[in-house]
Image (cartoon, rainbow over all chains, first blue to last red; front, top):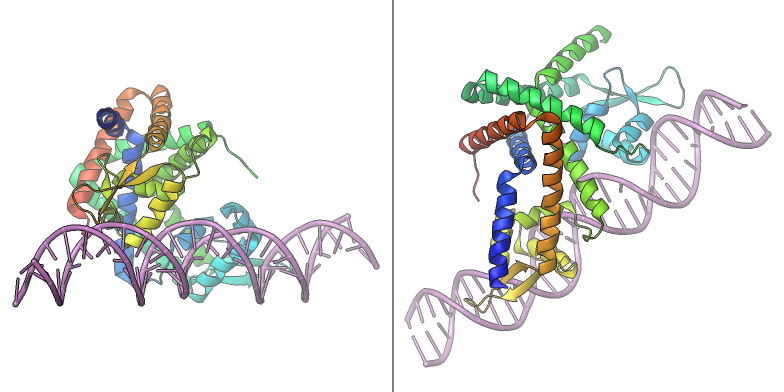
Length: 163
Length: 163
DNA sequence: AAAATAGTAAAGCATGCTTGACTAAATTTC
DNA sequence: GAAATTTAGTCAAGCATGCTTTACTATTTT
């Protein structure tokens, strides 16, 4: 078995070295960690967890109905409701009645929520700026273009399962 | 407030469009989803959850002590032990006594675990291959090099907190 | 009036951790 | 070399998170 382990080691390392995707995952994770750390250091913003962060991009600025949010998140409306309730307590979101439908409510950002969001994005912009300073605009732009290409590839190639 | 929302929309979209990091995150997430789906479709492999996947790369092929695993994961040894126990039941890992220390055990891959790992990596390689077919080796290689540069940047720039 | 829809409320459950209490082996101290 | 301490690991209980299912109210549509 000891010899076998040796072979495996080689296989594994060869695979790891060559794999763009693993490096991409690693890179994204580390950058995300760094971003989270920086946002946390701002400390003005309330404690947003991953689930809250996932919710954010699905909220249209005109306001989004809870059911729609739930659909976009792929969870029950009760689950979405809980997340919204959290963010409501934190002052990031508010629910206001939907003028078109007495049953419905629209989930919208509060002013504080908008500002927090902008601050969060500013952190990412800042990190990108630092990255550009060190690595160079040209390379980052090229990298960004390839990201766009890959994103396109994913859309055409991943078997989408709309429930 | 309605006019304000309009301004915000512009700010937000401008920021989103320009941001490399967000696209990187999105890209990694989508590719990860696709990879997970493909591995799940293999269905020979047991049901590994994210926590298990995170554990894997910390296991040296010669075997790793539980305490070391826990340190690398940044969790208590009890937590690490539970994950190892799960994977042990699934037949992916096994614990064997450490010859150097009667108290200690070494966590190692079983043969099945090794094969599963290689299959998982094969999925990633396959996806990379498809990507290369569509996008071109040259661009992917360049992308990969930039990933390396960014990974280096992270290491030097992120404030590491070793507990 | 009946049925469907938007949302709420509450309880339950799996996950992924933690803390606390313990056993056994190794190391240190005297 | 025996006693005290540290270290490796286990067992069990507890807790926050992020969901779910079940049950309900209020409104709209048919």
